[in-house]
Image 1 (cartoon, rainbow, N blue to C red):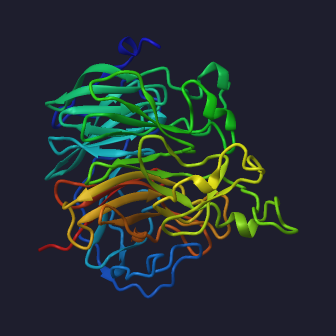
Image 2: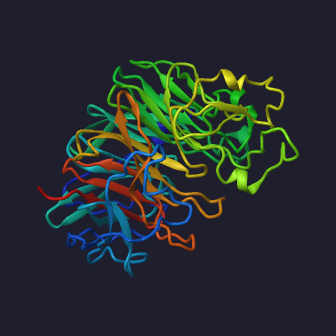
Length: 455
C-alpha cells in the first residue's frame, strides 16, 4: 500500500476563502456563482427525443406531468454551452438554473453543515461549494488524491472512494482531517498487472445502517472474465464489516456498479453498466451474431438490490426483457454451453433501464422532495456512446414502493437534440437541504439547481 498519508493534502475550507490552487492539475477555474432569475416556463409540446424513454414509465403507469423550461445562467455562469438558450424537460412547476461552473464534476454529497461536496477525478480533488446570499463559493476540501469519485457520509465521517483505495476522514468546521485507509491496494490503471488497461477504474462508496462500508470495483473491460478470479476480484461490490476489517466480495458479476446507494429500508442497491456488443442468443440462423438491432436494446442496464452473495451474471449471463423482474439468459460468446454459470438459476433483477443508458450516480430521497417524488431513487444517466439513435442523457426517478423500486420516470431530460448531439450529460443528482435537487454535469462543466414550486 502506498504511503497516502504523507502524499495527500487536506485543504481547510473557510467562508469567503479563495479557491486553493496547490496541486492543481486541471483546467481553468470557474467564475464565482451568482444568483439567477427564476426560469420562464412553457408547456412542452415536443415529441420525445429519438432514443429517449417514452413519456410514460415502462410499466405503463402514469408519468408525472412535465414541461419544458429555459435553463437560466446568470452573469459569470453563461459561458458555453449556456451562451445560447438551453431548454430542459422538468417536473411541472419546477425551475432549473446553473448554480455553479467547474470542470468535469462527478459525484456529490451534502455535508452535515449544508455544503455541497463534489468529486473531480481528473484533478484529484474534492471541491466544496458554499451557498450564500451573494452566490456560490468554491474551495478545495481535499487535493492530491488518486481519481476521487464516490463520496458519502456516515454521521460526521466522510468516505471517499479513490481509484486505488477507500479512505475516511473526520469532517468538522469545514475541514476533513484524520485520514485513514478503510480498504487499500485496489486495482486501477497504475496496477502493474493491468499495464494501464482499465476501462472502469473509478469507484463508488456507500455506508449501510450498521456501519458496513460498500464500494465498487469495476471490470477492466467489456468481457474480461479474468476479473472474476483476480485478487482482489474486479467486477464486484465489496463490503468492509462494521468497525473495519478485510474487504470481502458482497456481490459478484457486477460489470461497473457506479451507482451505489442505500435505500430507505437499509438495503443496498446498484445501478450497473451492462456489457456491449452482446451476441444474439436465440437458436436459428442469427445465433451468435452481433446484430446492431439486437445490441441496441440488449442487455438492459441493471438496477438491483444487493444481498450477500448476489450474482449479477457478468460476463456469463445477461438480462433480457424488462422493465422489472428481468430473467437471465446465457451469453453465447462467453458461456455457450452454460458451464461457466447457470443463468436460469439466478434470481431476476428487480428493475432496469434501456441498454447502454450508462447509469452513474445513484441516491435515494426519503421525504426531502415534494410528491410524487417524496421517496425514490435519483439516477444520473450519462447516455449511450454506441447506439443509434443515441440513448439520451437524463436524470431518472424510480419511485420507492413497498420495499422496491417502481418503473423509470424521466425527472430531468432535454439534454439531447433531435440529431443526437448533446449540450449536457448528467452524472449525479442529490437532494439539498433547501428542498431543491442539485445535478452535476461533466460535459457542460456545470452544477444545476432544480427547484420545486414555491409554497
